[in-house]
Amino acid sequence: MRKLLAVFLIVVLVFPLLLATLSVISISSWVLDRNFYEDLLDDSRLYEGLLSEDLPNYFGRRVVREVDSVSAQALSSALREVLTPDYLRSQALRLVDDVFDFIEGRDSTLELYLDIAPIKDRLRGEDGPRFARALAAALPICAAGQESLVPEGSIIRCRPSDVSVEDAAGLITAALPTFLDEFPDRIQLDDGPIDLRREMRGADAWFGLAGQSGLNLALGFLIFLAGSFWLVAALVAGEDRRERLQWLGWSLLVPAGLMFLIGLAITSELSAGWVRFGLNEARFDGFAYSAEFRQALLDISQNALDTIANGFLASGAVSAAIAVALIMWGAATPSERRYAPVVSRAPLATPPAPSLPPTPPPTGASEPAAPDTGA
Image (cartoon, rainbow, N blue to C red):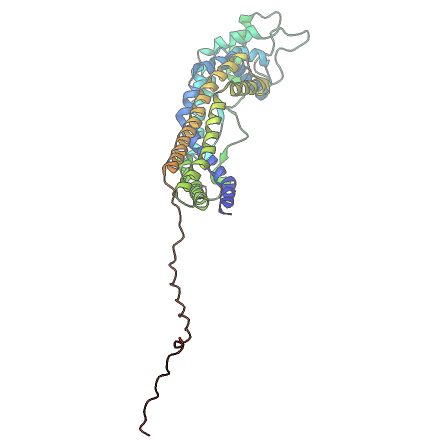
C-alpha cells in the first residue's frame, strides 16, 4: 500500500514538478539575459538581408499609408539609398533595451516603435538629392490623362513623359521638406504603449520581482516544492535507507533523461526544419520575407538554438549524474533487515510425581506385635 501511494505521488506530483524545475533551470541562463539577444541582433548578415528588399518595402508601404502620394515600389527603391545597416542595428538594439528595461522594472511603460527621425534628418540634409534622384528614376511614366501630383500631395507619384529624370529629381528635392513633415517621427510596431502603473494596481510592488530576480525567486520556490515532494515520496516508498536512495535516484532519472532528449532534439535537423518552415510561412507586414533575409535569420536562429540546447543538455546531464549516483549509493548501502524481538518462554511447571500405593509385607512374615499397654 505504501509503495502504491508513493508511485501515485511520483507520477502526479514529483515528475511534473521536477520537469518544471529542470526546464526553468535550462532556460534561466539565457531567457532573461540582455546580452544574449544583443549578440544575436548584432550580426550584420541580418541587416544586409533585411535591406535587400523587406525593410524598404515595409517603409514604403507604411509611408504611403500615411501620406498616400507616391508609388510604394518607387519609394522602396529610393529608400535603399538612405537606410543603412548601422541604422537598423541601432534600432534593433534600442528595442531590446526598451523591452528589458520594462521587464526588469526600470521603466513602467513599454512602447515598440521604429524611430525614423534620423532618416528624416538625413533626407533633409546631404542625402536628400541622392534620394530624390533614386526616386525619380524609379517612378513610372504617367499614363495618358494621369496627373503627376495627387490632390494635396507634395511629391509626384509618376513622371510625365516630357520631364527628364533630372528635372523630376529637382521637383522632388524641392518638395521633400514638405513631404517629410507629413508623417510622424515614429512608426508604431504595436497597438499602443503598455503602462503597468495605469493598468495594474500595485505595479510598484511587481517591479521588485521583475526580471532575473523574479525568475530566481520562482526557481527557488520550484526547487523547494519539487524537492519536498521528491523526498516525501521516497520516505513513503522505502523501508530503509537503501530503498529510499534508490527511489530518489529512479524518480529523478526519468525527468533528467527527458531534459537531455529535448536538448538533443533542439540540435537535430528536425528542429532546423521546423525553423525553416516557420520562416517560409512568416509574413512581414503582410508579405513573405525575402530569400536573403530568411537565410540570414536561419543562420542566426541556429546560433540561438545551440545556446538553448546547451541549457537542456547541461541540466539533463547533471541531474542524470545525480540520479545515477543516488542509485549506486543505494545499491552499495547494506539493507537494514528488521528482526522480531525474541520473547523468552516461561519455564514449564513440573507436574507432581504420582503417589504409589503402599508396598504390602512379604507373604509368611509375622505381623508386628502390638505394643504392650500394661493392661
